[in-house]
Amino acid sequence: MHSVVQSVTDRIIARSVDSRAKYLAALNDAKLNGVHRSALSCGNLAHGFAACKPAEKSSIKALTKANIGIVTSFNDMLSAHQPYETYPELLKQACLEVGSVAQVAGGVPAMCDGVTQGQPGMELSLLSREVIAMATAVGLSHNMFDGALLLGICDKIVPGLLIGALSFGHLPMMFVPAGPMKSGIPNKEKARIRQKFAQGKVDRAALLEAESASYHSAGTCTFYGTANSNQLMLEVMGLQLPGSSFVNPDDPLREALNKTAAKQVCRLTQMGTQYTPIGEVVNEKSIVNGIVALLATGGSTNLTMHIVAAARAAGIIINWDDFSELSDAVPLLARVYPNGHADINHFHAAGGMSFLIKELLDAGMLHEDVNTVAGYGLRKYTQEPRLIDGEITWVDGATESLDNEVLTSVTKPFQVNGGLKLMKGNLGRAVIKVSAVQEQHRFVEAPAVVIDDQNKLDAIFKAGELDKDCVVVVKGQGPKAIGMPELHKLTPILGTLQDRGFKVALLTDGRMSGASGKVPAAIHLTPEALDGGLIAKVHTGDMIRVDAATGELTLLVEQSVIDARVADKVELRNTSFGMGRELFGALRSNLSSPETGARCTSAIDEIY
Image (cartoon, rainbow, N blue to C red; front, side, top):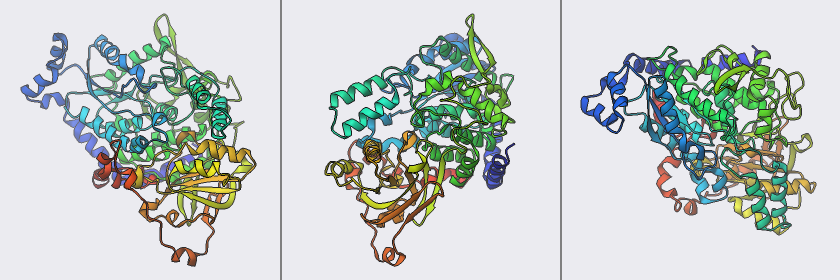
């Protein structure tokens, strides 16, 4: 093993020894109870299979055949989740073919950040992860199931499903992806049109045409944002079948993989031959594997919160120091937009997951000795599926990249580190992703332009007041304040300023997610303004240093001046009501810091 990867893993294991032991003890206690349907009364059981067909009722009654719960996030407003409409029947049939049964255990909400960006609804986005976790637990709470298939892809849906699933860690579970849409217009062209619209050089009709040509059909958006980062993470953690993440929805291989997943989860139950509970698949080594793969591909900064939260649900404690130390050691092997011009389909065609995992395994940067849903050992994931005469066969993946501009080897990386940096200074702690930021733009020392709402920047920009070096500071955007919405309305404006030759950076206690691009953005700042963070005392004109090379994040104001200032009050009146936000007040006020996962799961802390 690479010395840094092993060192960080050892540190996480030591840090988590008590909490992980308690989690595994709870898992083993549940495991010893056997098939849970045996604990149900006749009335309970009759309710549970009342709507089933006679043969299915007989199987469930017998307690000798597995019953698989399906937790689905289907809705046909999300392009990525629309294919899930037909999955339940297909998965049920596949389970029947191996002598098992499947039932839809429940549904979870699934919102799209792409639709809500810049809108009030975005303030529910991060909060929805907790709702999804709880809804997953509700769906699995009936003691009817021996395993589960989890249907989710996008931003908060995958981590929510995973957190909920880990509370049933004694059950085997697998994620079933639906795949990305086929490539539309190049992402670079889409970004160009967005900037021209921000500059007033094209109208709304031209912008909508470009957006529609990019997001054009069923499937995951093709840029390397949080949704595709989720899929990559799940596969490297051994929670999806090898090579299943990026097969398009209409590819015949997609349906075959779905059927294979349903049959495989049956084998993983206590009634099968390969009992493998999800609480044992997700361990310290698989968590590190997920982080390493994300860093090696320039994955979404959202995962710096979601992996923390999911790991905690399994009794594993990680922090941003772990991310940063691994990032310094792990080379960048992929260039996928916004870290390059290619999209996720190009990554898949260039060798994709099997090549990436092989490179990292051979370099000692991934732990091979882990449980996966495909069996023991991560080396299985260097293979990829082929559909031959209607049957899936796994074959060895590419040994060389098929497109060196998209995917490269450990010996010839795009850069020697993963591009994620922990930022520290008197302003607090933040993360910055610089895999898409050119080196000459990674140091900015400039006066602050302070706002408390991303929508206010457009007027300042159009008034010409941003035509200068500046650090745009957006405060009052943290989890407790307004649920930490993404701030993508800022991207075209900041990109335009950079193109004009100005030194520009972003500092915020909000999010920029997986689409963080060419402008340096110190995000997820903690403590947030509402929680006593120094960002609440920053004034327009204050000098700020953002140094992504050294990780320095400093407000260059005398301490005596800072001490004399009164923190600006975070105004919440306009963000507490409307669009359902009033229903989430208690949840929002109890969220933890971004570095601890922005979680509202104090009970987990008390137990584990």
